[in-house]
Amino acid sequence: MENFQKSGVLLRLAQLDDDLLSLYGIGRRFEITIIGGSALIVLDLLPNERFTTDIDVLEASHEALGLLERYDMNPDVSTFLYKYAENWKERRQPVENSGRVLDVFTMSNEDLAITKLLAWRKTDQRDLVDMLAVGSIDLGKLKTILGDVSEVQANLEDDEWTALLARFDMLLSGELE
Image 1 (spheres, helix red, strand yellow):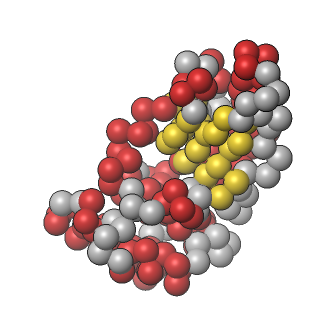
Image 2 (image 1 turned 30 degrees about the vertical axis):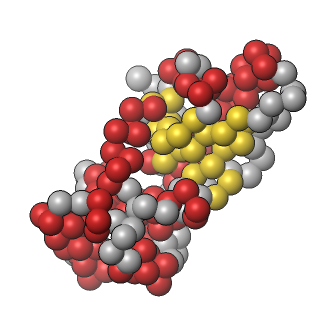
């Protein structure tokens, strides 16, 4: 698998847009929601260049699904959708310069942070520290989302919720490097 940066993510999104335009014409619009490292990269939420090996796709128009693999896009992250904040879709944000027929969105910065708190791999921890360091996370908004029982807590088992809160405390206290 190839490593790529922001230009690589944007190129793959543009190629998907080209394919959709060729197949369906200018009269239709399609949507895709990306998360993970690729979302952090295109939104410039990190202080340094970050590489990724794929583009995690949370949601995509049905017609786009068959084309995703061609451009290193991974739709398998939808498996964990039930654990994400309940109202993430209401907070999602558009990626600037979306395509001619493809509208690209990401979760809000705070919802992206929640996905990182849930996944908790070393890369996720590093991303969270970096996001916090450059002010990419609005802690007030994040605390509001986490404080609303219907948002995240209702979707998690008790031990998962306890672990998420402990991870959040570690992030805030500076225990992560």
